[in-house]
Structures are given as C-alpha cells and as structure tokens.
Image (cartoon, rainbow over all chains, first blue to last red; front, top):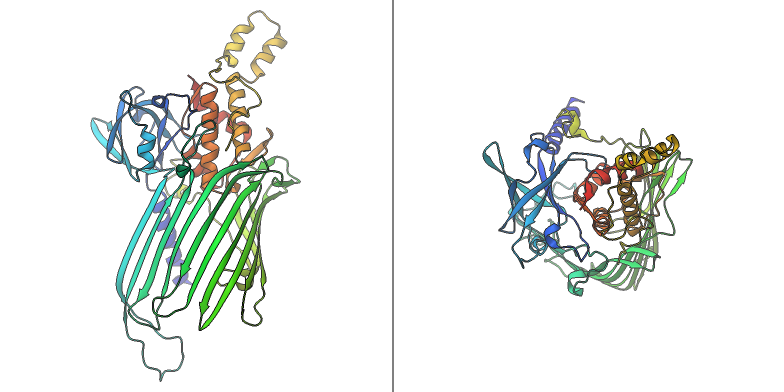
Length: 399
Length: 133
C-alpha cells in the first residue's frame, strides 16, 4: 500500500508546485476597424504571482513590451484585480507608436515570444510572456539514444533482441487565423488555417522495435457563420500518410472535413433552478479516401465519419456530456468479420456541489469502437477530480 | 463572419453614456421617493451596454443567451471559442464607446477551471473592467 501512496503523494506535491509557479500571459483587445490602433489596450495577466498587486504599477508610468525583438513603450492605463471574469489580476496598457507605425498586432502575429519589463522598487523586472492567442504555433523536438527491447514471447529459447539506436523527431506548425471584427477585411490567405505535422519514431533495426512515422497536412477555413444555422463552422481538407520505414505497410488518407455549432439545438436544462449556458450541439463530419496496405493486403476505398457532441444539465448539480461517432468504411477486401459501419458512444457525468461551483467528473461510460484501430470495448469509469489543487499549497493567494 | 452589431439595445457607436446610478440619483433632485428608487434600481447605460455586448458575444459562439442564467465555461467547447467570445465583446464595447481591458486570457483560464459565472456577475465584471472613452 505504501508503495502506491508515497509516489502518489510525491506526484501530488510535484504537480502542486508546478501549478503554483508564477506565469504571465499577453493579450490584447479587438477593436472596430474605425478605431485608431494607438487606442488598443494590451494586458499582461499575472497567474500565481503573489508579489504583483495594484500598487506595483502606477497609472501613467511606462514599461517596455518587447514582441519579436521590437521594443514598445507601454503606458500603464489601469490594473484589473481578479474578479468573476478574470481569475487572475492583469495590468493594462497602451503602446506608444510613432505616426504611421505598423500595427504591433502584425508583429505579435509573426512572433512566438514576448517580454514585459517594468521598474519595481528601482530595479527593472522582466517577465517572459506566453501569447494567449498565438497565431503561428511551432514546436520541434528531437531525441536519439539507445533502446532495449524484451520480446513479447514467453519462449526463453528465442534469441535476445539486440539493442538499437532510436530516433524520435516531432515537428508541428500551425497557423491559426486571427479574429476578424465585423466590418474588417483581410486577405483570404490570412483567414486560412494551415496545419503541418511530421512525426518520426524509428530505430536502425527492422523488427522488435517501434517504427511509427507519419506526416499530416491540412488547410481549413474557420470561424464561418452560415446564415445563423451553423456558427463557428470550419471547413477544409486534410491528408495523412503513415508508414514504417522498414517495411511497405502504409496508411494514406485524404479527407474533406466540416464542423460547426448548431444554435437551434441548445444545451437542455432539466429540473434546474438556474439555467446554464453551454456550447450547443456540435457536429463534425468527414468524407475521404483511404489507401491502406497491411501485412501484404491492400485496402482501398471511401471512409466517412460523423461525430456529435452535446451538453445536458439536470437537477442543478449534474452535467452530462454526450459524444456519438459513426464511421463507415467502404474499403475493398476488408478482413472477414470487420463491419463496415462502426459506432462509438461516450457519456460523461460531471457533478458540482453548488450551482455556481465548477463541475468535476465523477463517471463515464463508453461503448463501441474507439481509437485509431477502432478497438471494440465497453468501459465504465468512476472517479473524482480535485479542483484548484494549488490553493491547498499556496494559501489561495491568487484566488 | 460574426456580426458584432447585433445588439438589441444601448447606445450606438460612440454613444457611451455616463448616466450611471449615482448620476441618476443626483438628477433625481426633488422627485418622488418612487422615482428615486426607480432611478437607483434602473440599470445604468454602462451596464445595459455591457449586457448587450455579452448577449451579442454569446450569440456569436452559438449560445442563445437569457439573462437569468449562468455561463458554464467548462462546457464551451474550445479555447478558440473563448477567445472569439472575448474579442466579440471587446469589439462590441469599443463600438459603443468604451475602453475595455483584454478579456481573452481570463476566459481561457475560466474554461480551464471549469468555472460557472452567472450573467449578473458576468455583466458586473465587464462593467468593472471597462469605462467610457
């Protein structure tokens, strides 16, 4: 028992200390197209930073905002303490711009890094900022090293699998189009979401080790409102190619996708003293072509998929999230017994102690075929989640 | 795209008004007690504008709002929707003649916490972080 409890407690403390670290986020307001860009308010939010308060920043004084290597004078306009819609305090400021200057928003969109500095007690203090609404998101990772494998066979007479050199490389890039206020115009290319991912996980050995490699690319047009029938719709296309390096198996998909919110079907509230508002019914559909080669057999054909996601409230304290997915595989030469149509259904129940407290997951039920290989399962889960774990370790200083 | 001018009430662009409760009270002058009470309890223009922009923002992300309700941020389906809600409210308030603090970081954090915020508290929060130009 102690072997389970001690690591669990250690993990809890490690998690708590991670949550309690001070972090800072940069954001800005959206303006009407006719409003002067010098009037745009920017803000740095201080999350878990007990040493920052309203007295830290003097209204009218100046700090420096550095975005992508360019320094801007930031004139403090106000300090917003935490309230119902801002869980953490933030300092608000405008940027001094020379006449005819380029909009700093464009610099923000082209950058992945920013800092904010301000004199505190006579010394310049600098905070490294994360961008709440990063437009260009890129991440890369690279690992190489020795790997050892123990075979899955229980036959002790089989020869041992020799060690291998393993290479892992992951690179993702995503351009997420910025919010365009009503009446503003922008070039079509700025409104197209572009996603690309390359994942390599292989070794120098042909068998006995992971050999999982894929490349994915997609183009999407998000934030479409279609005559009030569909809100925040997103349409586009995606291509994926997976294959091991050491054999000829592969899986190639080319898919057209469409997703959106259906305002006509709002979240239902049953026996509630106060109505709760949530995202309405969400639908996502895709249609594509798949070419798959596995252990000498080749399957080709059309693949269709549809997912519906819906929130439901009941008896003040409960929220139920329902997800249903149907996949139709029209592939030729499917192995015997493989159904063309497969369904998956998930119901997750959340409980809130009071009508205005956050919900915690308490139970879920899954039935159907799940995962990339559509594994058939029926699964129940009952659990408790801990909310705001950091408040137990830092005295709730930021709450 | 989203329409931020779908507000049902309040001043138009540049139409911010400072006739809040205190001013209403002062203007009440020698009116009757009933008029005085009505003046105090009548929502200020600032609050009305914030309410209108909140309703407009919720509609932009597909939610049909009602005033006697609470927004369950945990059931807003993505951070992107929270950012759209924030920017929609900001642009709306800008159009009505208010300076508002950025809202997007707070909304994303509320979603991460799974927070539930009543419409009344939501509007009060907007009033506290915005001011007429």
